[in-house]
Length: 148
Image (cartoon, rainbow, N blue to C red; front, side):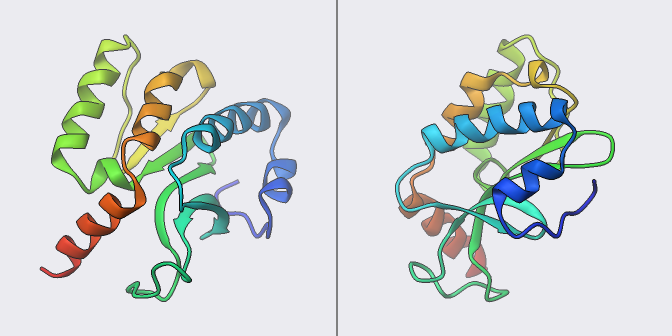
């Protein structure tokens, strides 16, 4: 599944093969357990997303809630999008270094960590990466970049 039309997270997960559903659910659980206050889970762009709601921050470039993280099942892999890692050099350096220390192979684009099975991810690090950026800090970085 490259893109879903599911309107809810439960409907999205129900579309997946059992192995993918289990892996995505585990990653989702660590995200929800460690998600800083203010972010909300939603469906956005055909993915499970973790966003700053428009009620909190309406000044987005596309009039959509500002995405902090997302989780998607692609055709050949699953993806975890970490906008806080992509948007901050110090956090990116920390994340890459910690990933290497885990002994697992990092397959990463700009914000996208690709994985084929749950064992590919250092789950504690994923939780730490999510917990690392409170909403106020993420908004400060977004505004600084947006202002350029």
